[in-house]
Image 1 (cartoon, helix red, strand yellow):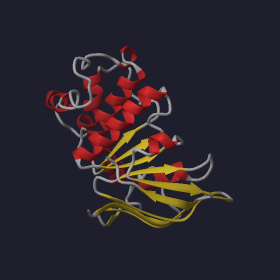
Image 2 (cartoon, helix red, strand yellow):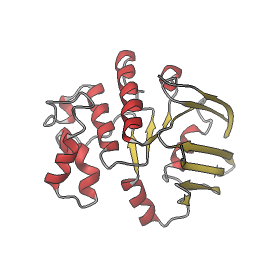
Image 3 (tube, one colour):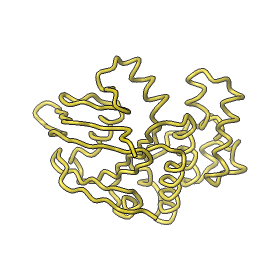
Image 4 (cartoon, helix red, strand yellow):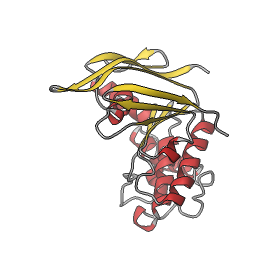
Length: 227
């Protein structure tokens, strides 16, 4: 499989603190990559750099071979909306919108008419076990249901890469297992790659590869065959 996302020689400094110290990473199509490490190791900085949320001081980020870290802010914002999907620890759903409109939001922000966007959003509800919940607002959903809505929102625009930042961190163990199985399987089936930060080794074990980050460098690399 070809490389969809890559970072080479990534350096990120915050004043005297070096958060990334020359990291190289490649993510293949349909790949799932877990980034782990202790607090302050640089794992979240690595995810945010690959996702175009922060810019590296040195090095470059490439999406399908094209450099993206040096794009202007408008083009970078468009890239994040169109070609990247995001799942956060607490979902970050809009409380005033029903689930189907929360999922459709990335499409509507790009100018897709509401009805067409919602029709596309509804297609994700059955695969994620959300049938019948289309009209519920976030406050009417359980934590696991809300995260599945967030996964649908991340995938609705058919992104190249989905970034997940502690996507199960606010869930109990049983719900966490359900959500991570769905996240990895549905992302892979959609053709997107998955890059995830997690502190939970059981969650990371569902991914194809694990990168351990320490002091801004990759300290260990593991690869698995995931059933």
